[in-house]
Image 1 (cartoon, rainbow over the protein chains, first blue to last red):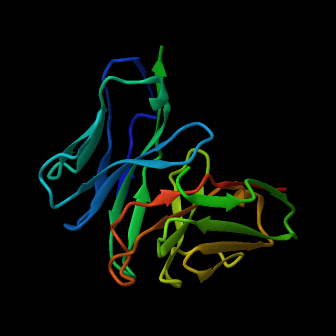
Image 2 (cartoon, each protein chain N blue to C red; image 1 turned 45 degrees about the vertical axis):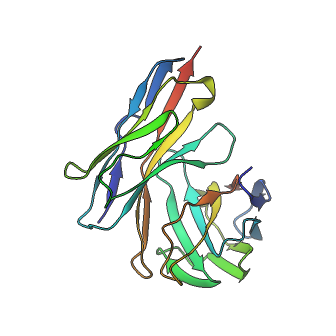
Length: 116
Length: 118
């Protein structure tokens, strides 16, 4: 069975600094997708970044980038130049497509606080 | 706003009540999802609909009954719930590009309904 582990329940970072959130997963699948979602306090969950497992190149979205290590089953999120608006819960998620075998599994989340 | 709305935003109900949660998406998507978010636990995928057909049901108790009358609306009917069912219920939608095989496209989440069962 697939599992997603986020080992850091809470983290804090100074504004303008860089922070890395860790995520590991366990699967025997070869075709899957990985996501980082952000859930600000009392606001809707939104996608931060996604990575296709078949792509070796790490995904980037502006200040957000991932370090995808497929063999190690690691998918960490790096936030550069942290901003106060980055304060949120961050969830790592694993998705395996396919009808009847579809899986979308989330980690328990990391609460990130950006300090002024 | 992500284009996915949920009503009500808050709901308190007794164990013998019957209520429904509503989700509506304005994004032209054709796949919709129900999740349960409990404190200290990962989000749990409950149901998946693609092209208005239920394609996944992750061992959810029968006291939760989903309904998808069209591609823009998704309901979760609740009856005889238990206190442990108290949680944030999130709806999401996505574009299914795989003809019912469940898309790999990004999911867009609603704000959730905070449910409390007394």
